[in-house]
Length: 366
Image (cartoon, rainbow, N blue to C red; front, side, top):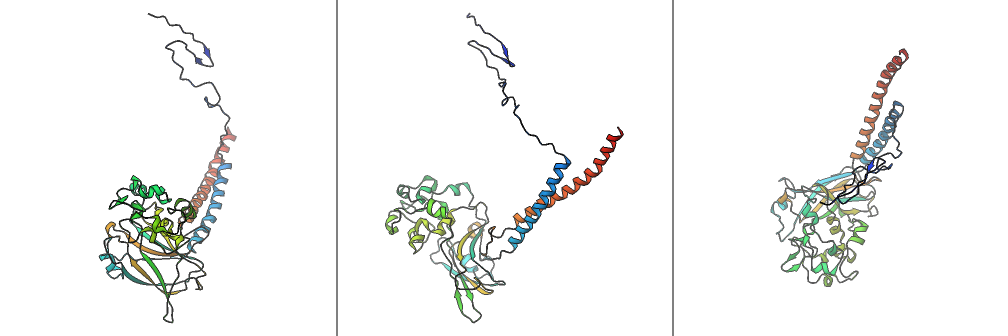
């Protein structure tokens, strides 16, 4: 039997054991950090500090909320649902008879009336409901290297794109479920002049995507090569697309992977009901104001079926302000928080006035 020797000594509350089978102490070292003796500031909450804080927050948040709410209400917005669910809808026949396998697109025209003119730039959005772009497998179904123009990923798509990576033994460009389900309705606006003239409103197809997306995250294979047909040779279009990716636009700066409609769609939405920017109507389009009050018509080339997932489609016309689009929630939130803080300040002030005097009288009598 081997003899074991150990020495023990106490130093700052530690017991150090030495030897072959020695166990180290679990007690933290006697330092200011590990023993939590660092200098700290702990506020003492008194009526003199709490009550002014409540009143200051209330007096600041309420006017800020009113300003945000008024600004949001000044934004003009008009929305048309053109899903075609109701039999009275001009797009009813299109919604009932159209599917992904349809060879001919369906066209419908929806008249509407703008009760007030739209000044400055007008933004045209398309909206979808009950479309879950936030599904995990859907969000991952893309190849960012391919979208950035990598030649190897163009012919060898990522496994994340399955089952939309290959079709008829050819790589799909762009691959993945997100690209395959790209929104492809065509929307056109017409102004019906009181004289009987029907004027088409010019819609800008560029300037709708983020600059970083178009110039950093997305790029065509071959760089700035004008011959996109040769650059995408050996690939095939997504299954649900009508045209290949190199034929999305006649403008070379808005074609292929850098097409802005495609880029906007590839930025997935967080909620099942969402809107995405479709076109911009600039103020200098020849009409003053940009959209005058009067009769309009929306002409839809119905390419995107939504009956399979019980979705709805809509077109939105909107102006913007310094805080973005129409969103009254932020203003309501500021007003609510400010009102609650101001109310609590009044309640606590009354309680302090009553109970504070009572406590002072008791201290004096003692």
